[in-house]
Amino acid sequence: MTPVFALTLRRLLRPMVAALMNRGIGYIALRDLLKRVYIEEALRRHADAAQTTDSALSLVTGINRREVKRLRAEVQSPALEHETGIMTGVNMAARVVATWSASPDFRDVTGAPRTLAVHGAEGEDFDTLLRAAKVDVRARTVMSELERAGVVEIQQDGRLRLLRASYTPAEPEEKMLFLAANVGDHLRAAFSNIECTTPSFIERALFHNSISASWLEAMRPHLRRMAEQFLRDANEALLKESVAGTDAFPIAHSEAQKRMRLGVYYYETDADDAP
Image (cartoon, rainbow, N blue to C red; front, top):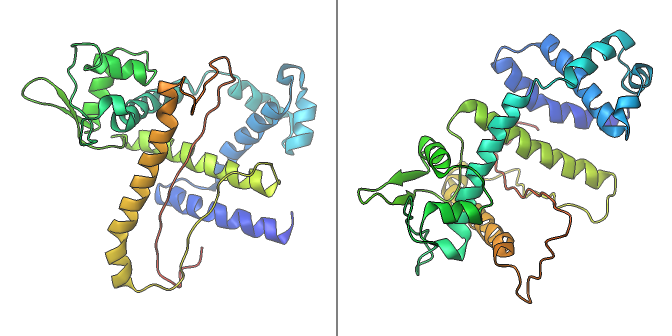
């Protein structure tokens, strides 16, 4: 490992280790988890994982064969189905909110998200929104999740009103899964760019090392508004596939499907607090 790579890893690991210690999670727990992650990644890298021997995995990961055999059995068990189910529900709820807030079909003349009937005329009810967001789940289930997260409210006339244009999970465990997805994809983009993948992914940041606290206090709300507007504009542009078939956005529905993630983050600390 080169000195620069070692420094990079220390800086990446430092905030994670700090968070672990804050939660009383020590080195041994992290070490055991790292072993499992090594096995997971080694299996993913082999085209025919079922035929890959424990010896081959041991060679590539540096983990002894006895541990490889035990960890391999854990990795290939459905132990993470619960977590996967939670993330699936969170993603569906987020997609519904994104469609409601950005699609022209669900906004009024002022550009604000329209209130929707729970059930009603085609194009004016929550079921239509679910179809537009490509969510094949009962409307009541999704509504309950959005109410729980404080994203929608049921008005006195029985219609649903969107309270904010972004979805944030209500439970800490669900927020942790969002963190894992966001930071994980950020790291994948960054390491992919280091490996000179073409085309490169967007991975840039603005930073200033010396700004007065009072000026930053004044600018913080403005920066938040700019970030939220940028994400809303990007979301609206991406949702144009929902009205595909125009000359500007021809969509071949037989094309391979992709997933993407575009993020904005902000952090501040004392000027002498090194990363």
